[in-house]
Length: 473
Image (cartoon, rainbow, N blue to C red):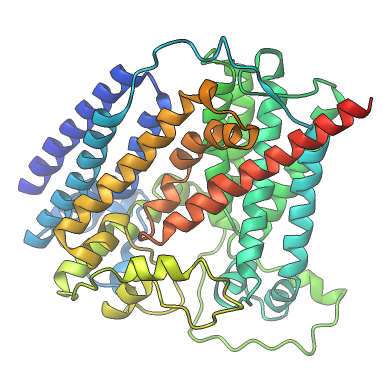
């Protein structure tokens, strides 16, 4: 019960600080972001403690994280777990205090003075469809391997990929962000604050087709991270682009567009496209699995359970317990070395230094073949101990705060590209918390390039092309 007392006390503090941040900024993105932090850091604790008290009674209402206790290590509500709750709570609280201290209040109404940037729906749709096609071409061989050997595309692409896999991931990110930003801009064009575009009715059908193709493709390959990231970004963008005048009908439409594929994803990840072997020659393809593979059969019941009680809230959470229980030695900054090295493309440097996740998985003797992930606070702890948790939380909070302050400073930013960066930067960071929290400091590379710079560049190009076309006419 002491664990519940600690967890309750920390939760009250986290909620109180979130309320103070809301009172100061009136920015829903901070509340959503803190909610994401809590989900991946502490929400699982309520169930783990409950299971410890009831001999895993959580199995009766759909919890399914128990397999990880075998593949990773057992987790108990003991003295070590008391530290786990404390460290994760400190991590969130330091982030909140940093945000609360460094955020600046808006001195005037930016929205009424900002001239919206005009973008081309045609080119955004073209970009996202082109990115999807190129991504499909890159992994086509892996798709055929999955079909021949009765494996899921998700498993093959995640575990047996080539040097172009990173490009494939970036293209998926570009596709979904281009799609959702464009679609939201179309929905809010009559009252747009930051991005606007044509209101021709033909585009609604073009977006409908693009949504069906791209989300269908991501479902086919088992990727939900892009939809989740793009979905939160889209929800936040529709709020800010309509100057906080929420149109609940439009918001509900967009919510349905993202929630359906997210709901189906976990259940469909085990699907194998074996029908392709009837149409394509796969005789020369080889596949040598490193371990035995098993998947849960797709049923409506386990899909609902997986959606409501996702293992996402448990697996990253376990990492601090594993580090403390195994007395894993600190690495003193290897994540920063790995982050620096990651800037060099993989095809130019094949044996780049491994990240902190690989070190963690090796040290706890995790069974191969499953993605376990590591919590962001755990990664910083492995680098610099408790000081690392404080440092990581401060860096997290200061970046989040900087992007928020720049968003409120748009009228003083001259160049269009930088305006676009700061229009989507704050909400892109918030949306990417789900990915950032499940990785070490190395995850900042994906944040900067995949979540902010590349989507901003796509929107910028769509805007420039539209400007050129308008001048010619």
